[in-house]
Image: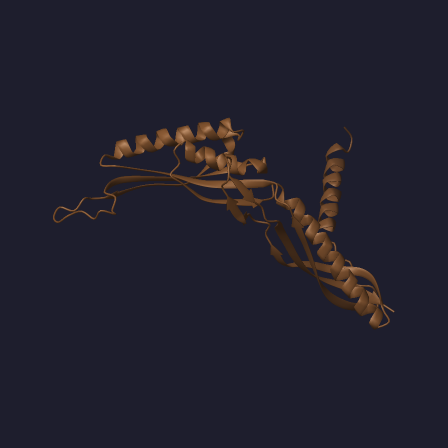
Length: 240
């Protein structure tokens, strides 16, 4: 084709120029004569939890390591089966900690009555309960199936990102309101935004249960709200 290579190289050259123009484009300049006003803002939400996490443990002990491990595996399998039967998905049961330790029996003197000798297998696991009202029933199912302890029950949010985004929006709006008050006091008006910085954020993590009441099965848990807090610093442009 006539001029083919030349046209192709010319096309590539223009594409490179366009790309470099995008990469090196200068930042938007501040309005002429604008004053910068820095204001902080806070946003917070208090939401009812919609997911619970039950932390349980299975401990077994034997003079033989294989026996201790086999016993632990057997009990854990029973607990997992009981929990899934109560409506929890198998994928919502996750291992938190697993340890095999050995404590030899003393060769001389009487053994300590409160000491466990031989091999001890400790397995901690978490159960995410998406039907939050079933947290007590799941805890009971763990114990009934052979779990040796419940290390705690916490409540949180299934979608913490959405709550955090809402808190950020409230914090930015609060910062703008503060900036507008400052601008009005100085006979100015806000005309733009230069930068926004997230200065502090409290992750909407799980909160421990408020109280535990065992009256009739299943166990009942009182739930505390989950608090999400965010702080921002915003630089605004203001003009007369």
